[in-house]
Image (cartoon, rainbow, N blue to C red; front, top):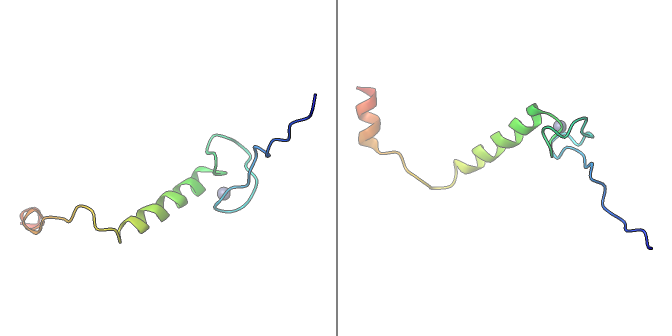
Length: 63
Ligand SMILES: [Zn+2]
């Protein structure tokens, strides 16, 4: 039988590059890094034209 080489399952956190202590927030090391990644995606999404806010809808809410 040949020994199959598998890639290490424990990869470092993509945000802070430190090894994970728990798999709970995989692939991130902690909830903080997970949120950081999430915020990064949200910020990128703002530049993408998706659903433009209706000016009338906004004016109604401000009144
Ligand atoms: Zn991290």
